[in-house]
Image 1 (cartoon, helix red, strand yellow):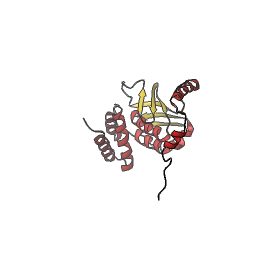
Image 2: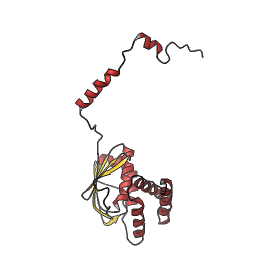
Image 3: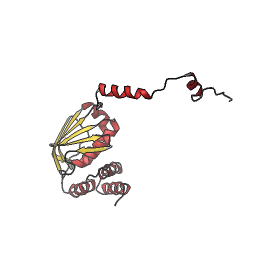
Image 4: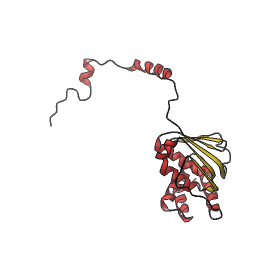
Length: 202
């Protein structure tokens, strides 16, 4: 079994070999490593994409807006790097749409890393398939064991606001229960507390 470090290094070198800069290649290596860590077919899809790269003209997108479309499929690597670079601005858009993206699973790995940067979950729809990216800790989906498409007709990216998964009543009940462990401070506890009664001899 190949180590994650070996996967990242090999993908980085292969990316450079097909024409990307070392900086972009490094980001690609990290992203494919992430997919393999989560049990997703990163190596398979990056291989297929590199095989097509010299035969098909893919579109680059450097400045992302709310609605992005192209007659030629977007390069998932360039798109992913742009998304990473602009995430602090894109966060304010809440919803971003892309039309015609090649090998969307590669793009998804960059979005997952962006989720960690802004500290928010990101909900993604690839056509009718749904994916939740959770701060780069995990990727959950309703098609995780299905074949990922080579071309996504539409990708919708929703940047979610952080919210508790419980009600105020549920929290208050739990907190009230936790109060039973609180110890009322007495004079003896004060005297024994850290630093109490010590003499500074410096």
